[in-house]
Amino acid sequence: MIELKKFSYWYPGTEQSALDRVSLSIAEGEFIGIVGANGAGKSTLCYALSGFVPHFYNGETEGQHTFNGQDMASLDLGQLAGQVGLVFQNPFNQISGARFTVREEIAFGLENLGLPQNEMRARIDEALELVNIQDLAERSPFSVSGGQQQRIAIASILAMQPRVLVLDEPTSQLDPDGTRDVFTALSKLVSTRKITVILAEHKLEWLATFCDRVVALGGGKLRAEGSPQAVLSSEQMLRLGVGRTQYSEAAARLLRTKQLPVTLEQARKALK
Amino acid sequence: MNLRVEGVSFRYPSGVLALDGIDLAIPSGQLLAILGENGAGKTTLVKLFNGLLRPSQGKVYIGDWDSAEHTTAALARRVGFLFQNPDDQLFERTLAREVGYGPRNLGASEAEVKRRVARALKLVGLHDMADAHPYDLPQPQRKLLALAATIAMDTPILVLDEPTIGQDEVGRGAISRILTDLHRMGRTLIMISHDMDFCAEHAQRMLVMLNGKIHVEGTTEDVMGQTKKLDEAEVAPPQLVRLAQALKMPGTPLTVDDFVDEYKQWRKKKKSK
Image (tube, rainbow over all chains, first blue to last red; front, side, top):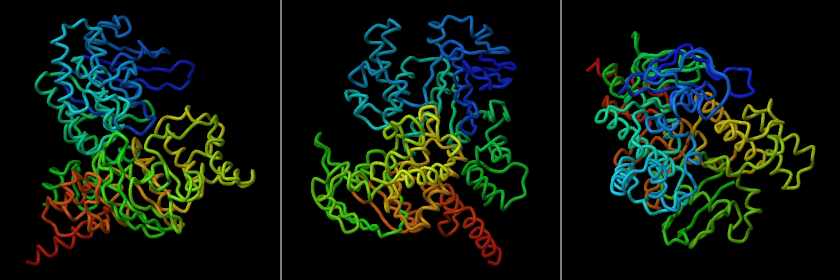
């Protein structure tokens, strides 16, 4: 569905590439996690996979970059926006500021799609419910906490019903409950609607529990790719500044095993 | 410096009762973590410590000061504050000016300001970028910068709201070292965090809030062992505690070292049975 082949990207006026010959192929209905230290290229990869690179961020590119077989740069932005949604790391970048209530904020994107009123209402209600903020519908998006704003930003993209959803650290401000809500909602969308979810995240335990595949970046390069357990349990994660779950760390001291556990359930089985 | 909260309630102008009868004593030099779900009242509570908010009822004492008798500016000399969102506290043109702003305002000499700026930037690992613009840094590093600015105030008490948010392993490691240093220097440290693994490793005591009240308080080991109370407050124990529980292993291991030791003992006992 989305394919990068030896794709490199330079932000305008920079000499160091933010992405360096990245090859990555993403199929419909996959739930993919992106890990890497800060500055490793996670956000830039999110921009590339959602088409913000090169459509919004200028700069130089090299290599192939396709969406459903078509060159990403040649695609019409309007069409692309209907299919791919990006949730920014900082909810302030997402919230329009042009609307007075959360409901109106979520309607903002939908208004541009020319949907009938009742369809819009249904989509907004569903999006609010998915991230569990029905009670905020009539509040101002600026009178709520950072965590709640993050949920609003996610809801505003979910309401657009994109086929591909790219999220850049969407749970950074959320408590464990909020994090669980977001991961559960995404996982439900992947299984019921076959949408594709791509998620950059530091919370390894959650990625390991929900993702089909994990991609690790370091210095703009793709350093590892595979099942969450294979990637996240490897010692390479320490060198990349990604770290490992404490399950892996404890098991590394106690077990001689080819693949360390990365989730609670895996650790329980390995150590019982 | 110690800190006391006596019978404090706080109601926002909107009518929401955010704090409801809080009594709390934090001794000098303690590293306390405040936990609880979003909206439990954590940030409201710590904003009373430096006068950003004033209690609707009750008293807050900062050392020998009744906070009601001191301005927010005066309280800032005793209580440093790292906001959850660094952008709430950054406004200068360079990192050095940003970090120097507080001490300069407190009337420190230029030589003293320079010394404190250098030390604080070094602590957070940003000393090579002293002349850069704060907004040229990515957000996680802006948080470290805000932390440097807080440290440069040299206050006996520091409040850190979600210090590890958005940090990768390297950033968490830096914050971990800084907290350990400040703790060793005898500072009173109060940290709000959802990062349970981090809290379990660093905090001496924990305070769990629920609906504006103190739900449970005690040593880290004690609080982390109270599964039912934590459940009620929607606070998940750290990974190692959950693993010990899943294995039906006794104890509340807070660090990997603890876990490894306790696990070995447990296996030995199991075998000998």
